Image 1 (tube, rainbow, N blue to C red):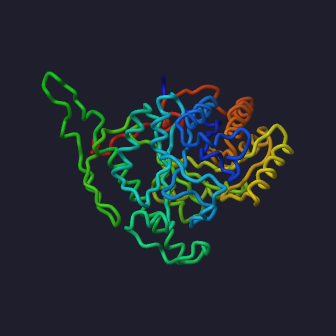
Image 2: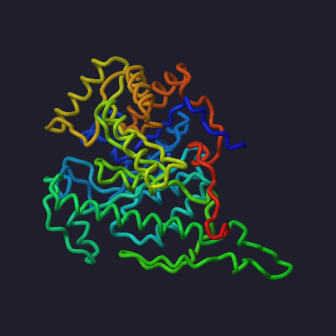
Image 3: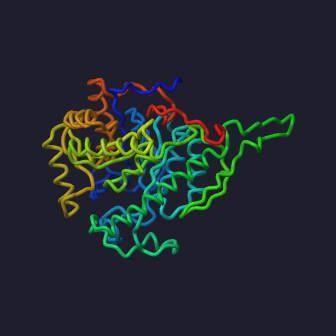
Length: 404
């Protein structure tokens, strides 16, 4: 199948899968499956539903500590979903059960080695035939730092986000992540595409001259290479990252293929897109600016009143009103389509929707929102590519070492 990119008028859609949904009481909904959260079948059903809706990709949440209502500390609550499976392994398990939808697990890069993640994502790209990506995530949570014992928790109050000390701390975290992504990318390129000869007659399996040391030396990493895994089918699986503030815009502009942002208004979305695009252009990265996706938590029902009533009921069960780092949308699929089109015109190339409850809001996306967007002519009616890069209109990049 030819890797035909989507028309420029089309928007991209992804869903962020976590637990029983993003609302803390989602696991208590009548259609929830709390007894299956740690089974392969549960995740396979969700990802297959995303593929049924022709979505570009799914992201799968992960962490190194148990979930918490507190942004930095464990809460020890027993009335919330706690515990989860490994996101990369979920993606690998569901990959043979799907054929088109992209698989983008989350990886906490603050405490994991880029060499290990590079071969894990490369392997996922092989077993999914070119549908792998990765979401790199920072963590400054003390209880996660304590799992490894190689760092000292920062002596800063992250609640005072605008203070110079916190801004410097966060900027350093993004700088480390940028180096991490650079190591990933160099390792994926450390085998040229034709390094494997597999010539049984001559007894040569690989051409050693086409394996390269990456010799990366930086403040946080010193990696010689080459990778143990040959270059992935996509060459470079897409790298994605979520940022909430200008301090992270450099990571999106320089290092990511997709950046997730969390605007609460169309004007805010437009301003953020313009800022990232300007940064990419000013620093020489404007040849192919990254996709910018807007994140939204969604409660979807046939009427706005029903959606609002469901959110209210869940809040009552949870014992508190649900809040989020991003906008919470409550309404119908048609109303959501209006909002997405408005922000698409403001510069967002796609959206990562966070279903408030699973499977209800995922199904409302695939069987309500998607047909509405198709009726308006702004979303695909069939997959036209096999790879995640193909869905996103991203060319397969040349190998930097072969080009040299």
